[in-house]
Image (tube, rainbow, N blue to C red; front, side):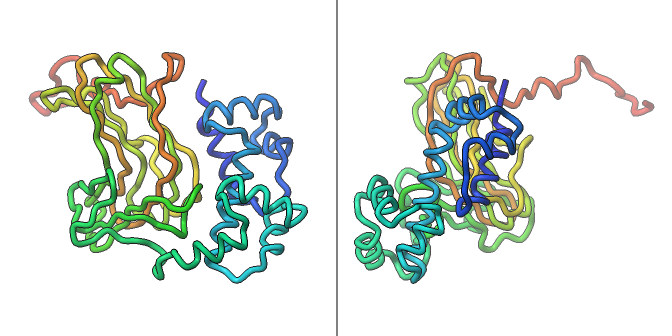
Length: 293
């Protein structure tokens, strides 16, 4: 059984209440599970416990406030439910290796004046390429103000898009040989703003001739409009004749999408694939050839 929707519902609740008193009991009650069952399914799907997720999301938001506001450190600590400045400092150093005050001074000087670094004039974002139907109408880059964890996220946004039929992708591709005969899961976090078409992760497995063997672009579970950070995944089989695995984030039409903390992992056959089965759209035989039906 897939618990993705339950976990996404709980993450929406957590993200909206990071400044409130969050307990495992209250979140489990919100999604209608016992706290023990909820604890297990959240950790299995997201890779960390719900308590750890809340902690590092509070710290990530606190890091943002240190750089982009003049709020006192003690006020930031209390806002994110730390009982003392000392407990906040210990937790902050665990993730950023600096106490909050030093982080504000050092990173504030290093942060670019604009909130984001835009890739232009052939400048490359390591590992990533911009493609799609109208890539010149989109921009990709690094955002150092909006991120899920750490110090930055990647973004893809429309710039001169004229119609919803235009799309672009921020993508990578790599050799499939290490994963032949295995089931592969891509997961990560996505945030969106004013997406008029849709956005989401995508993943494709090709053979040596370029034929598509497995594919999913989240078309049946699209992300639209304004959404806070949440966890999404794609699961595909990698047949033994595979040669290339491609993946990325897709943005159709106008809007902006951020991605962070992407990861790949092998999963067993108990994890259902999200592959789009195009054979389901095929007729058993030709029909209505005289157009009378």
